[in-house]
Structure formats: structure tokens, C-alpha cells
Length: 498
Ligand SMILES: Cc1ncc(COP(=O)(O)O)c(C=O)c1O
Image (cartoon, rainbow, N blue to C red; front, side):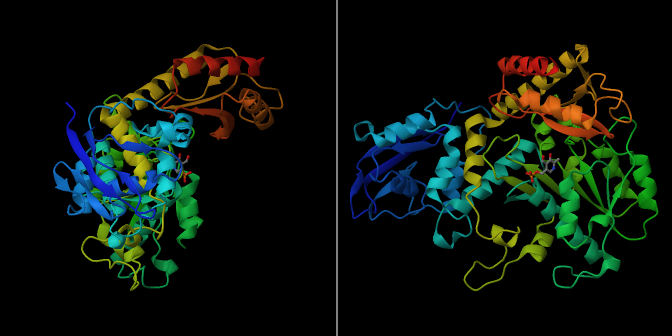
């Protein structure tokens, strides 16, 4: 059953030259449901929204939530009441952005209407709240903290983990590896955050099929791309051979870093994280997991096993603009080592909050000012709930499996890897005599097919290479993709094979 909150605005007078914006608004709001104010241009909609979100103090009157005057309730409490992760989806009752805009322009139709998740980016942009500090009295950071907590609960990570918002998985991997660098330095008596990096104390980084952002992050961190040492893979897999990793770790006399993949880009393969984590009994290493999209495997019992052991990680990268379906740019880095996070990212200035016991995100991540990324994520989490997010993941995976099964039967295409999650990796069957050295179509042939598939503008696949073989990948992560879209994909594939 959905809990309801009662939100009242009593004789509320806000900015815009003391214009009375709302008088005696009385709303019953199901938990997690956000209400948006629609009215004529310059009628004070965003001002009222800000007041409701406690971004602005009213000149007179008050906003009351469940009997408590919002002005006297702390930001954290407000966010807590509004920000609990619901189990079931809170059904958006569907107004489209265009409808919203149209109503917003029509003074005669000014009314309160429910909000749809699709409109989330517009609000974050319209509010233009810099989620940088509580010094301005806003709820932005409180909501950010609650959203990170909801996400942690959704993903089933233990409470020792805390998260921080960043712009994407590349920056999330950067944060995880920056912490790893600090940790490895400490092990050797160096405070990397305070001292010049000494190449002789830089850790070696092991990975199987690391995403390109890992070597980019190593370059940005001054560790160098050459510190990345490839671990041999299991036969026909993108997952590393853990026994070979154990051998490589045994040859190291200093603390190392292991980057495990939870969802590779080409085939959605997973390293055996449980086995890797067990190696810590005999080897000293920081375990970072790139779970940019694979983290969402945890929301369904059908796929959660792929992540077995991931709770033992030191840092985890999760992208939100992938499977949480929020607008770009949004990702999180989770870690159990907030202490190291402060050592790396503390941003000391008299005009900012001090790091202290409960540090604000400016002391925990590379960025200072940043968009209020938490708001769209909060919308997605509350609008769909845990059940809704599971349904999206399961539907995407089912459609990927169906496409994979169809390709296996097709004479035009060849499936190159089992569909483990949401990615289908395939190539045109056969190929010319001058094609790829190890059989199959050439790079040019694959590029031509990829272009042909995308030509109608309704289907988008990307070219790649799997074990050196030119290939095509189709990834399913959109919340709107349904069976009907598979028909569209099939007609594009058939026409391209033509
Ligand atoms: C596994 C993995 N890691 C990292 C990234 C980089 O993500 P972003 O573009 O959000 O930086 C991606 C993007 O596809 C990815 O799939």
C-alpha cells in the first residue's frame, strides 16, 4: 500500500514582487509522487516549486508537510519523507512534455498536474540548482544523499558503501582508481594526495576486458596507461581466467589493483567476481568493479548471480544514464573507503563548507559545481520503484535473448557470443574471401551493414571487434523498448542483409 503525505500551502506569498501565488492549496501526495505546478508564463510556477522543495523561503504563509511547517523541518527530514524507495512503481498518470508546455502557456488551464519521469531533465534544468552546498539552505544535497541511499538499496549493496554522483562511468572509474592509487600509496607510506607521484610506488593494475575508460583514467591519474596489465581470458569469453590472475598476483611484491568487469561492452560478459575476491585471502589488492550497466543485473533474481561477490569490492562504478534511463550526464561511484575519498578530493576553501564529519560531495568527487543530477535519478527510482526497475531490466534482457535466438536461426547473420544480459554480439554470416583474417566479414563489410541497419533512422547498432573479428553489437537498455521494436529491428536487419 502506498503511504500518502499531505502537503498544504497556506496563504503562500512568494517572490515576483509579493504577488500571491497560491492560496489554500491542499494536496494528498502518495509517497514518492512529485507534483508539478502548471500555469501561465511568469505566473510563479517555478518559484512555487522551489518553495515546495525548500529551495526558497516564502515571504509569508507556509508550506506544511504532514502537519510540519516545512520551514522549520530540516532539509534532510523533508528529503527523507519524500525520498523513500518504493517497492512498486508509482504510476505516472501521463502528461507529455508537449502537453505540459502547452498547458503552461495557457493561462486558463493553469492547474496542478502530476509529473512524468520523462519531464525530469526539464525540472533539473529549470530549477538550475547547483547541488554544491547546504550553505544556501536548499534541499538539493539532502535529496542527493537520499537518492544515493535509494540506489544503494535498489542494488542490494551493504550499508558500508556510500556513493557520489559524477558525470558518467568514465569519471566513476576515475574516482575508483584514484582511491585505489591512494590506498596503494598508503600501503607503501606515501600520501599520494599530498605528494608528487613516485613512479616506483605506483601500483600495477590487472584487468581482463577492461573498458577503454580504465586506461584513460590511468593516464589522467598519472599512473600511465602502461600500468594496465592484461590478464589472459577464458576460452571464447571476455572474462578473465582467475587462475592466471592468481599467478600474476603471486609475482608481485607490492599491493596491486584488480579491475573486474561486470558487463563488458561487446558481449555483456562478467568476470567471476566471487573467485577474484577470494584471492584477497592470499594477495593484497584493491578491487574495483566496472559495473557501468551490469550493476542493474542485481535488481532481478534471474541475473543477480552474475554479480556474486561484488559486495566485497572496494569501489564500484555504476552508470545511471544507461539502465536507470536518466538523461545524460549521470553516474555514481560507490566505495566503502570514504576516508580515502576525502584525502583525494577534499576541497578546502573558506567560502565553502568544511570537510568535517559528514562531508559534502565537493570533498568526495572531482567536480565542485554540478547539475542537480540526483533529481532525475530520484524521479526514475520513485516513478518505477524496485519492481519497475526489475521489470525494465528483465524485459530488455528477454528482448536481447529473443534477438539472439533469431540471429542463431538466421542464415544472414551469425551470433558470436551467448546473450548473458542485454547485449547481442553478431556479424554478417560468411563474408568475402578478402574478409577478416580469422574468417567472417571485413571491417568495411561490417561498416556497410551497420550503416544500412541504421539507415531508416529507427534502429541503432554499433560496430565493434570481438577477439579481432569485426562484429556488430545491439544493446537493449531503454525503458520504452518492447516486442514491437524487435519487429522493427528484424526488418532493418533483413533489409540490410538484402
Ligand atoms: C563497461 C563500461 N564502462 C565505462 C563506460 C564509459 O561510460 P561513460 O560514457 O558514461 O563515461 C561504458 C560505456 O559504454 C561501459 O559500457
